[in-house]
Image (cartoon, rainbow, N blue to C red):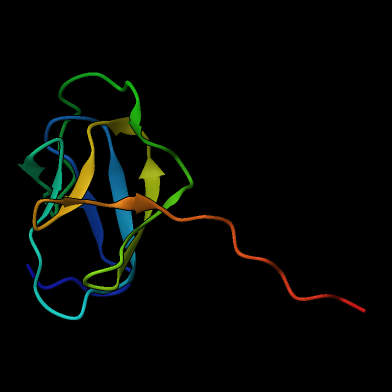
Length: 96
């Protein structure tokens, strides 16, 4: 699927939802818990256990994809079968 910055996607097997922050360099298949993400909001299926954490950014170094979780849910986010990595906090510039 072709992802654009600001596009929202919803998991079909959990309440998880994401927003694309940085699109990938090419088309990727984005999944959560092994199921493709939908571009329209879906009724929450399944539990809200560990997996995607609210407010956290996830990246795929291979494609350059970066997403932000806007609703937590169970399952692992993946791009073309590669699990997305939790992005670490960035250092802020000194203010003095």
